[in-house]
Length: 250
Ligand SMILES: Nc1ncnc2c1ncn2[C@@H]1O[C@H](COP(=O)(O)OP(=O)(O)O)[C@@H](O)[C@H]1O
Ligand SMILES: [Mg+2]
Image 1 (cartoon, helix red, strand yellow):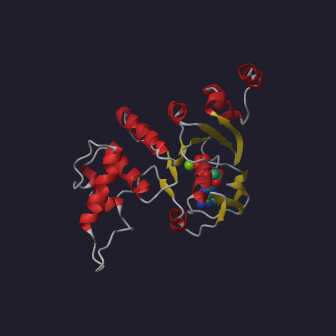
Image 2 (cartoon, rainbow, N blue to C red):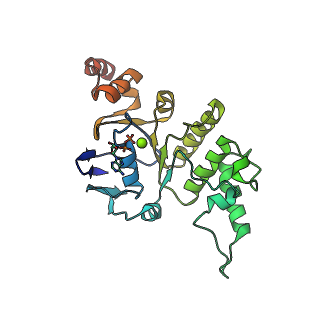
Image 3 (cartoon, rainbow, N blue to C red):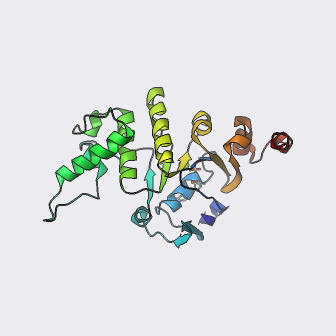
C-alpha cells in the first residue's frame, strides 16, 4: 500500500501511509483506538475506498470497488465478530456466498463437505463435528471455520482484526498455532492486535500507527515491548533506542 490517504471531511483517518507485506510474513498493526488501523485494513480489503494512494499486489496496481474485488486477488478478512451464520454447519459457513454447484446448477453438498473436511483437517485434525450448527461449537472451532473460509479460496493476504480478543487462553494458543501454519503456507498476514504478547510471539515486523500516520515500522528483533508502547502512546521511540540498536548491530 503506497501513500494511502483517507479523509472523512476534516478527519484525517489515514495520512500518507505506506506499508508492505511479503509472502509468509506476519505484520502486527498496532495503535490506539482511532489511530486508523481499521480504515487502512478496510481499504486493503476493498471495504472502503481510499481518498488517494495506490495498492499493488505482486507489483500490479489494483483497484477495489468492493470486497469481492479484493477476494478475487486473494485478500481475505477475518473480522473480530467472525461473521458466521450460527444456524448453519461448518461446510455451509465455509462456502457461504460462494457455494459449490453441480453441473446442473444444484448445490453440491458432497463437494462442499469434502472441501471443508480437507481444509479443516489441515488446520485442526481434532475437529470432527463438522455437521453441527456452528452455534454449538467452541470459540476456537469457530475461529477455525473463519480461517478455513479465508484460506480455502487461494488466499495470499489475510487480515485478522483482533482474532483472539474474545477467546480464552487455550483457544488463543490455538489461533496462534493457526497463524504459524498459515505463515508456513506462504500467506502474508496483517494482525491487528492490542496483545503485546501475541505480537511479539507471532509477528516478524510491527507497524505502529498514531493519529493516522505510521510512526514506526520495525523488525520484531530490533524493538522491545517498551519501545512499541512508546510508539503507540507518544508516537516515537524512546530516546535511547538508536544507541541500543547501534550496539546490537556491531
Ligand atoms: N465511516 C467513518 N466515518 C467517519 N469517520 C470514520 C469512519 N470510520 C473511521 N472514522 C474515523 O477515522 C479514524 C480512524 O478510525 P479507525 O480506523 O477505526 O481506527 P482504529 O481501528 O485504529 O481504532 C477515527 O477518528 C474514526 O473516528
Ligand atoms: Mg479498529
